[in-house]
Figure 1 (tube, rainbow, N blue to C red):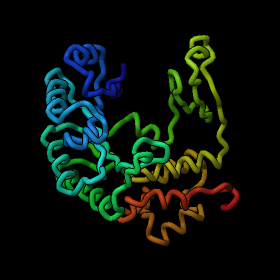
Figure 2 (cartoon, rainbow, N blue to C red):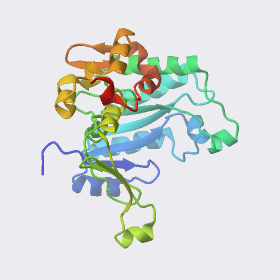
Figure 3 (cartoon, rainbow, N blue to C red):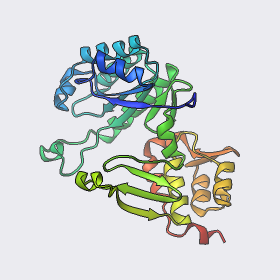
Figure 4 (cartoon, rainbow, N blue to C red):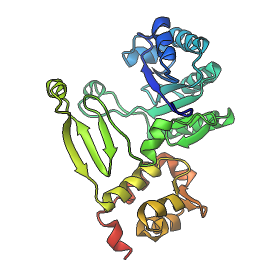
Length: 290
């Protein structure tokens, strides 16, 4: 087995225990991810999570005692009635646990969800941005690298699994409803468990055009703070990334920065990166540069 493999297990605070953690550790799981969401009991209740702050702290300390030294926490912010002081307290508790990675997500109220039906509103956009800046600054000040729009890690603890997606590399997806990307084809497995057990795994499969591959490279690669490596892009597609009209325009607008090795979103615009990514969508990348 390779020395640099990553084997992540997603843990629910309510159900994980010492016996399960020891079993995972003994079977070579070397990274844990805890869906904490928040350490604030008031907001945990709002999110209908059954665990408490004390349970989170207890389970993470237990995992570290057993030997896990690569732990991620998922954190949700911009909750209704949450303020900057609440968020800073969550970040301080995270820092006190001294774990290696954190994924942060702003709460977005989607149509047809329970929160939407209950008329819960998204927080003010200015507050959301202030919260994002607080997270970025606080974590950077405490030694965490901001390596993807929502993800921060101690040096060397970036998620290998997620970087495969953001680098637009191929991967297998096993199991019901899983997705994969192999030999230039993206596929989704069936959601029907009966069909799956019969061996009818695939639900659909799509072979990507060169244009789709380049579009995916842009949409995924610019999620990373360091953006896209120019040499790697050329080796993959035999085109210079600087030849694309959208890239030229965004560089001229100072929304993208070209440091001769990488092209990446200007940190001033990382918070609104989705708006920049929309500008990169094109149905005919290749012909525009011929």
